[in-house]
Length: 175
Image 1 (cartoon, rainbow, N blue to C red):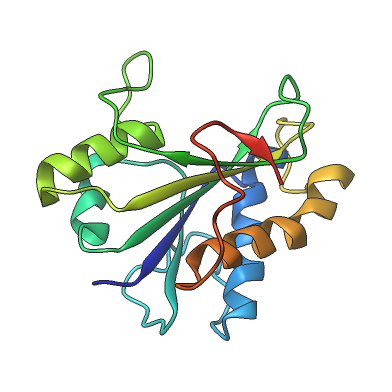
Image 2 (image 1 turned 135 degrees about the vertical axis):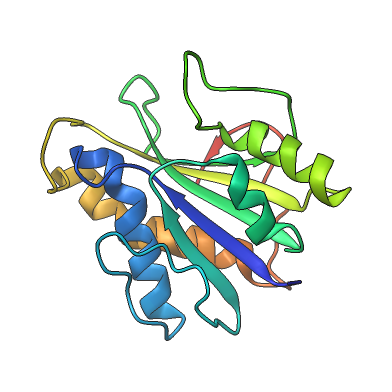
């Protein structure tokens, strides 16, 4: 695998935490792929331009599925304490783990495992969308719902091979 991979992360049963599921499906439509059904990850589906996947959490086993990608873009929600609507940042491998007893990893920890497994980490980005409500509902609140299309556009720009990424820094910035 040498193409780009997009990994949407979140829990669609917790309101805005599921915004990445909507971004992934919007992106899949733009790329001519069918949207994912509830519970489908997109693994194993052929895609010409990029593999566009969705997971409830990053787990170590997924490094086997993305080890050869050239570019990896994570999409997730961020909490209201971060006031920016869409934040895009370049990220790299770090030996970081989620607190507590969990099998899940933060994106930087996932990249650290990927680097250990594959001998290299792909060029990687995190695109996060501001959430407002994280209660038990499958419906997005108005602000993140309005950000789905713009966030899909940011991700599309990142996965295109000749896209201009000079607007990015190693620190999060609003897009």
